[in-house]
Image 1 (cartoon, rainbow, N blue to C red):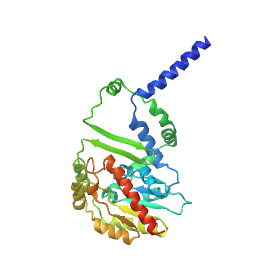
Image 2: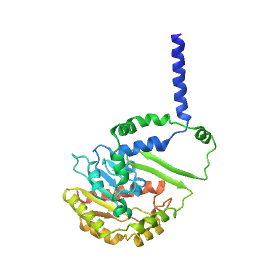
Image 3: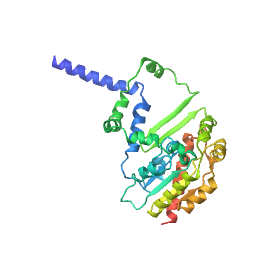
Image 4: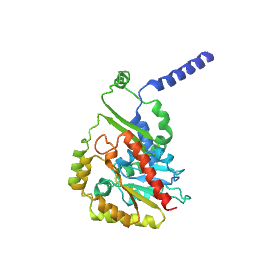
Length: 303
């Protein structure tokens, strides 16, 4: 009797494990939740922290940057509608390795990141204030729960149907803060309407800029290297940000440099977006290499 029970339990375990490899997975629920908790509560062990909005977290790969920065560790600390304000600066600074002499803060300065639209830091604070038990579950249990995702008959049916290659949306979570993203077919005008709505309510203003420049100056005085760039977008999106969003790149560059930051000029024509606002996967990877190379040149210049 005991032998039969043991054999049954063993066979059940083998069957469940085998099924876990073929059953549909809920990537957004388990990997996505784990991603945001790990980013928010990342240990202070980094030399380079990149901050900004979704153009940063979908456009900068720390894994690629690490390979080009001679041993420096990079964290992508971008959030949806992430602002460049005191709350996010304080959070980003907490991720630096306190013992490291090299501390580099990289700012992805999009239009929305420097308007009042992002001042509430909604996503970051939502993640930061989650109950401790939920955070621990996301970080430590979700890797296992992912393999045993709950499913429905509809999802099962979909998972065994032929893959439709005429449309896909890629969203792969890397636990260093980067979401590998792409979409086919691409529509470089897709994001325009939502940004028009945003800029009808919020534009880049002097109060927001003055606070940014003061913060940058303070960080530079503390010995932190501050590097800024404008995330590449489609030409219609740039024109919209410059007009309705009141974004003046030349003036922004000048005033950031006056505050002690280093500005990296980005040619947006070298990169492609899938919606007008976010780079596709190949472009994000290429941009990450280019960004790392530019940072390396800046750091070598001041050695």
